[in-house]
Image (cartoon, rainbow, N blue to C red):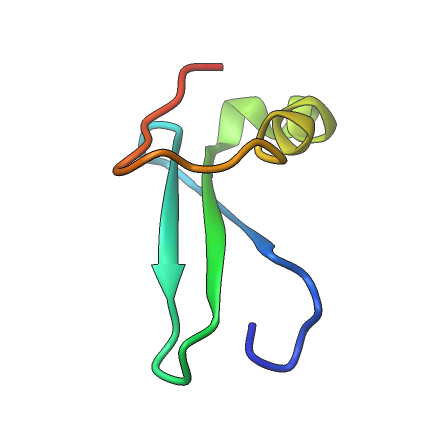
Length: 62
């Protein structure tokens, strides 16, 4: 993420949906969208919703 100009990263996994604010060792802060396999088809809609600021330890529902 440090080399990218993007501020959102996506991880597709088997765990529940969540959005975490992450800071790299170099100090770059970004949103990590943890997306369960069954929501991959709605990735576009999920990314639209992640454009809003993350508040605290966000666990947004889709």
